[in-house]
Length: 261
Ligand SMILES: NC(=O)c1ccc[n+]([C@@H]2O[C@H](COP(=O)([O-])OP(=O)(O)OC[C@H]3O[C@@H](n4cnc5c(N)ncnc54)[C@H](OP(=O)(O)O)[C@@H]3O)[C@@H](O)[C@H]2O)c1
Image (tube, rainbow, N blue to C red; front, top):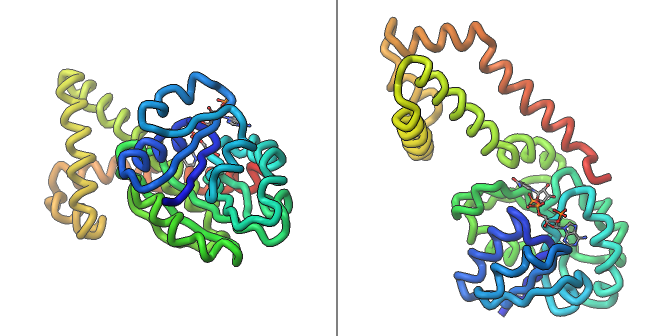
């Protein structure tokens, strides 16, 4: 049974833990600086500790699920444990490169990067993964781990900042759009709870349609020439909707660059 240790019982680490624990295929441990964060995972049979070093000692694969600016400190704590072992380090931190992680660990350590998103908490996440050469052996296991919380693809590291901006932050953009759409419905007189249900089901249903159709196909199926959707598109394009999306993803990509050094 694979021994997996997760440092940081937050949104991403916690989602992984619950799904992996339910699958029964892993020997799991978790550490966090806040003991109260660890409490919920005990009932899943997960080993809990406030010591990152102890966690690294008992695990073959260590997932650093802390904020980018906390990664260096975590690596400093666990680095001695990696000496002379085949342990692998997996980082989910935005903007922290494999080379900046490798230089804080013994030479030749397997280092993998994964960029997941918060949809992992409902098993519908999407993630990209990349690795250094020593990490190749652990790659299938890491892909298997993140398949427990959604879809996983390999992607070259040079595109990680863009992927972070696209799907890492993506749920927040969709939520922003959902909020605007609900407000728009309310402004037209639809009761708030009805508007909310209509928008949530519309977003969920469209996501299913988009699995096997292009975005253009879905648009064309809805848009009658000269009809209501066409009128909405004219107004939205005039207001710079598409350009705002391009600008937002570009700003997030720039921000991801070098977040954690
Ligand atoms: N949330 C997302 O949507 C998302 C999406 C893609 C990628 N990510 C990446 O995933 C990583 C984790 O994000 P998250 O949103 O899950 O963070 P989070 O909810 O803040 O969870 C991190 C947890 O680790 C704790 N922690 C901080 N320093 C620690 C240390 N030295 N040792 C042990 N535990 C420590 C934190 O405590 P404190 O609260 O006191 O810091 C917190 O409880 C980030 O690097 C982020 O870039 C997040």
